[in-house]
Amino acid sequence: MFISIRPLLFCSVLLLSLHAIPAHAKTCAQTVQDIDQQHRKALNSLQPGSDDYLHALHAIEDDIFPALNRCPANAPLLVAMAELQLSLGQPPIALLYAQKALELAPDSWQAHNAAGSALNVQGKFLEGLQYLQRAVALQPDNYALLINLCSSYERNQQYAKAIDACSRVIDNGSAELRSTAYSLRARAHEARGEQQQAARDDKQARESGFRSPTGVNSTN
Image 1 (spheres, rainbow, N blue to C red):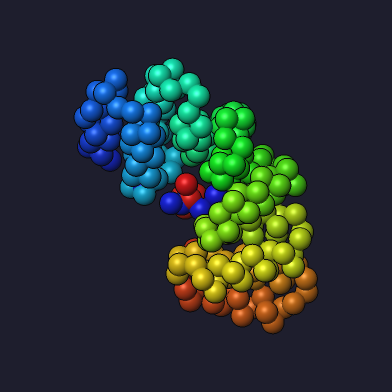
Image 2: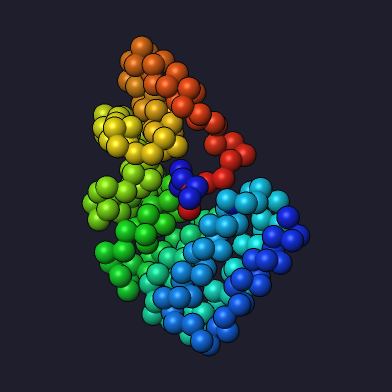
């Protein structure tokens, strides 16, 4: 689970805003910031899988390629590409970019998170867990990361650890994150045969607004 952090008119605005400053006039850091901002706008404003959504993401991709030529050893830019490829449904490509970013910046929690998410999407849950554990170790108070880690623990049948990670989100995270944490914790309790706890958490998830991820954007 990679949590979401979203019609021709919007795309036109998107492209205009990306090109408002000539590419050669931007620093690499400014380029990354602009790309991240446009990616978040697409995720928050457009229906995943729609033509407008894909058009907007491919437009961002078209701008990243020349930026990578200009900033070839920039780990945050490689992470931005990895995250974009995840949104485009290309986890193997996302993993390649995330791993390249880690070669340059081994302590980049964003790169570890992107790599772990890409592996999980490919069903390589144990490998993905290792990256997500490292990401959380680098950013222990990032509760969106903890949600990803909780989900990864649950997929790896490490239910006690899933319950602990989700409990930390429930105790300290935002309302949106708590609703997801309740749902994941319910699944872990159910897998352990703890039906009362599972039912209680499932009720809390629904009351706090949790919706099935089917048809809903993933978090970036």
